[in-house]
Image 1: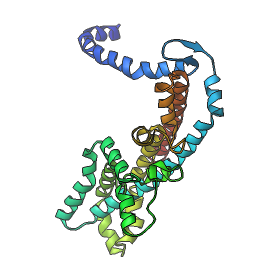
Image 2 (image 1 turned 120 degrees about the vertical axis):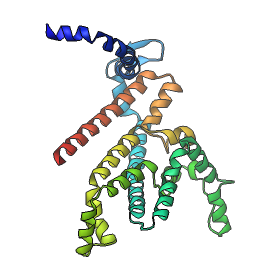
Image 3 (image 1 turned 30 degrees about the vertical axis):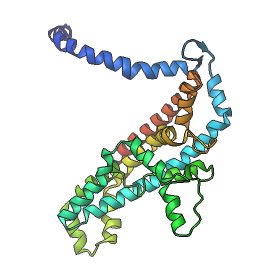
Image 4 (image 1 turned 90 degrees about the horizontal axis):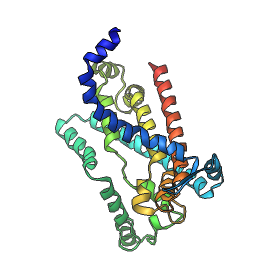
Length: 292
């Protein structure tokens, strides 16, 4: 009875929450639930016919999808290595600068790319890699080196060219997270390391690096999730080509939905990606809990 009375007294507060709740239900819960249902249907955007696991069976037999999974794994592993290593080293470099002016300068330089829209960055790299007028081939030609590279247009080079995008890979978000981790290291620990003779690279490997393992785990998880569901490069630059050379599951899902109106199959691909991301999230939570 007391609970009902408190609920009645707070009715005005709940009334104000209704618009937010409605938006959350419509845009937060309905789309994934709808996708889950339509993953088991033959849906062209208008009519949906229940077909059970046929979309999932087709996924297992889809050679294009299988190729896209291998491409995704290659890009994922390469991205984790380059992005984390360079962001970590960049943050360590700025953290250990003694000159506050130089530290602020490099901090701004590493963060500045975050304000540039991602599409603009991708289009700039596309221009650099243009086989005829791009800067890369022009520089190689001026040095007297082989310069007739197709880059994104060459099936043998396209995937590696995507990895090259963003060089030197000091990502703004990763840099900030690692820099915050280094700055949280107690000054007493750093002074004790100096007394023990741990300076420079030795201190980085023995003291600094172990103390930012939490940030490293976070960036790895974020990188994996982003790699599993991302297809921005394919959408803007390659359209998954040449052929299937740069296709990834996220791009295939987009293509099936908006180029072929095969929304049921696209929903199944999205559902499987969601399950994989959910599993990774649970594993990450378990590891963090174990560490705590």
